[in-house]
Image (tube, rainbow over all chains, first blue to last red; front, side):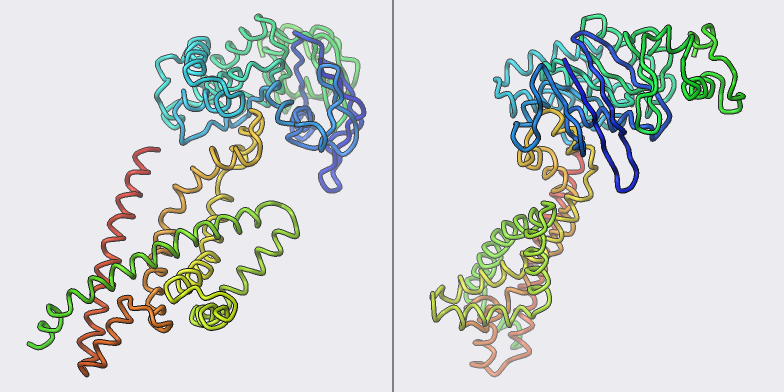
Length: 259
Length: 216
């Protein structure tokens, strides 16, 4: 469904992406892991061209995306995106946030948009919050509204950019469970996260990135239990055992499961 | 006391003059908002040519006195098009205030978190729709106080229109002062009318600010 070939991106002299290629199939859940600054978020943002890659190609649904020629707005409709800081529209209610794009972009009727929004709110467990403003919600609730807002455009792919990183620990679970449900329903998803438990449980494929390159890619069992590269081993060691862990600590299966 | 006689007797003249002042200020500020918004958009457009044009406009207008701009339009442009004193003054005030309003708008827009634009674009909104529906409504709430301030300055600056023969508050007070040889009285009266208008306007802005705060 998404094919990426030879993506390069520089921020000044810093190379954020180094010749990244990957393919995401329909209904696949791909989780991107790696240290901060490893290029995971940049890769995600290059897919819906919020960030313009300097080199390389992005193909979506068999169509090569040509910035400048193609209408990127049409592309973005089909790729929902959920941000680390939610980015809800603070001047609109929960319902207002969800129906805005369907009405203004897809031009569906207000009644239809509202009906769909109520259904989506029920799905993320927030039907009682529909008239609240974002500032009245907890972080976890805001992120669930943000997910509903993306889903309201009926995207074919959902991109999650560290959706739980800004949340208090006790609120992470409610967001992850909505994401798990989405995955079960067959949504194609790409998720940048530090939640290794989620990666193990939900991912069809885990991709480890470091310094702008894909170092390792495989099913979660393989990546977590028998990583092939030393950099993956080091990273998993730090994530699963804490920063003081010696670099050669094996990322053990049991510990990974509980992380 | 003769001052109070002047104050009472001049009411019909000053009420009519105050109406002209309000009309002039309203026309100038509505136009000034349009001009300000255009130049603010040019400044943040990321296109170098547009930004350069906007910077030039703002520098020139902020760097020259309003009375010079007013005379340039009233006497200078009159050779090409005669706008009359009201519209000459309105256009000059609009161009003048537009430069300041452009900077107020730009500051307001740039104070909105980048994530708002990204979220809007990621939902498939194009740039102008995202601006109109997401960024500007939020920016507007933040710029109400500085914009109100600029409106008050604009209202008082409209007194310069007296020098292109417009019979607004200051123009009328000049005429009455010289016919009655009572400068202190009539300029004081003019000042009182300006003060009253500014107070009324301030109450309006405060009310608007409070309402917007409750809404968000």
